[in-house]
Image (cartoon, rainbow, N blue to C red):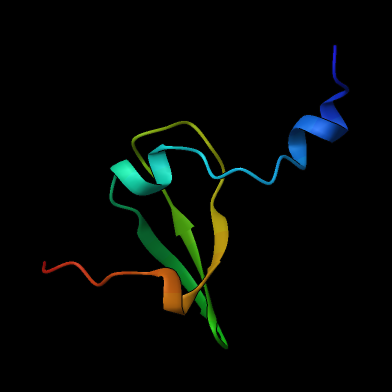
Length: 56
């Protein structure tokens, strides 16, 4: 079985990132902290160029 450190550093993107909308909770320079409410995970930092603006 793999250690949790290896699993935590998995380079693959989880499907929920592409299948659900996230909410930007903080901006810093060219990155945004995004929270995905559909899944019980902590917010993640993503480069702004990866984000798509959603109409309110």
